[in-house]
Length: 160
Image (cartoon, rainbow, N blue to C red; front, side, top):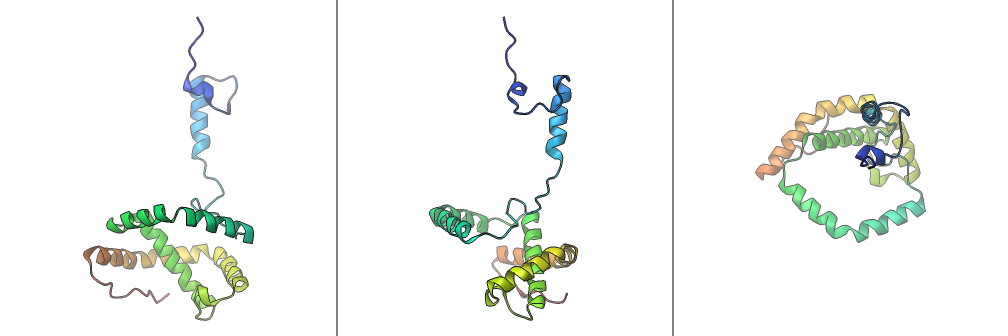
């Protein structure tokens, strides 16, 4: 009688041919733990073309009910630490964006100028990270105030 197939037999790639099954599995686990070059956390970092933007728009319109439901659920919960860090990063990017665009917000700047500033922001990751660390306690206080039902005293973060 033939040996029954195991889960490992269905693995698409044999990382270490000729080795023991456990050694192969460990190699696969190590390979999985190696970070990739994508630092966007699931979000593409390249700018979208017009066709891609149109397709994404149609896709979002189709999913708008699900997105709204998820937003309502998330509003009832306290934001997790990774979410707060992401918010702090975004606020830090916006602060530096305003400095580079001479006080204008993203919506007031032309798309070409915005892309140019975004490229510059990508080179300032270290500085943005430092500002985000400094802003994080304020972001956390704002979230706690939101959950308590109070209005946060300062939504605008200043002082780089």
